[in-house]
Image (cartoon, rainbow, N blue to C red; front, side, top):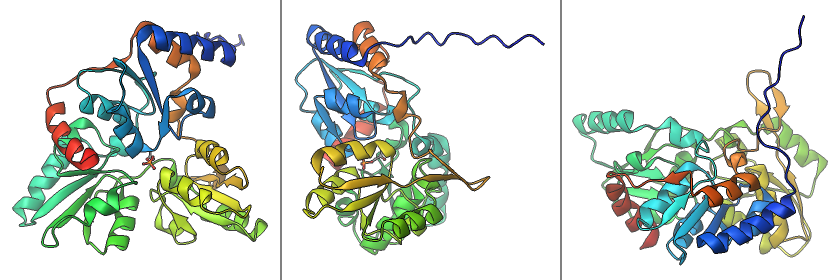
Length: 329
Ligand code: 13P
């Protein structure tokens, strides 16, 4: 039988150091600033002008002085940067960098669900995690990130119900810490949902003095055995506040270990493994496949070619109003 023909991928190996030099040159030539989320590869975080969590990056984007922003993250992040900076050109190295949470909550189903709730007599405000599309944001009253969610929810009048979309785990956690009852949309992050409680317990047993730090997108069973719960920036501040060298079991996207090691190198960081639910096998799925689409090559290409670009859409104006009020005021 003839062997199958493997098509060339078109991405030949290029020396990362050469690519970094090229990116530096192109940044000057094209008047660009690079923003990178803590979940992209460490070398990309290192060459970025701003690295951070979702909240900081949305705010940093409004401080950029160059005419172009290259957003190394996922689509909703670059889209939010464009919404907040209409006049700037916003590039995303790979337009396929999506988000399972944003996917799980689409415009029409959310609009229909809101109408159904209103028809049933619910008097509610819709709070959306920033991991949503601009169209979905335009249907919402508040946008939150893991960094400001509690603060915003505590501002909502007690007589209003809260519809929280799309992350059911983050919503459940916020409901617990704020004491506010919430109607939860059944979405989840593909990375945070797969942590294995059994493997986490085993890692704890093998590292008896360790602490578990978990992102609030994790399901309840993981949060229940965690010593610290917080978004990516809060995790950084927490490990920094501890001087004694400690082993941290990290329940979030694997690349987060890079900024933790940079900020607090006295500690040891162990990624919590994920699990394939259908087979029960441990996997390396704590790497977000969308964030992983950001590569040095694609950053160089998008700077060189001026694309892919996030184009302004008419419905961005409504999303601007809610984003600006939620994140910048
Ligand atoms: P933060 O950066 O706000 O912690 O959130 C991480 C995330 O969900 C990225 O998709």
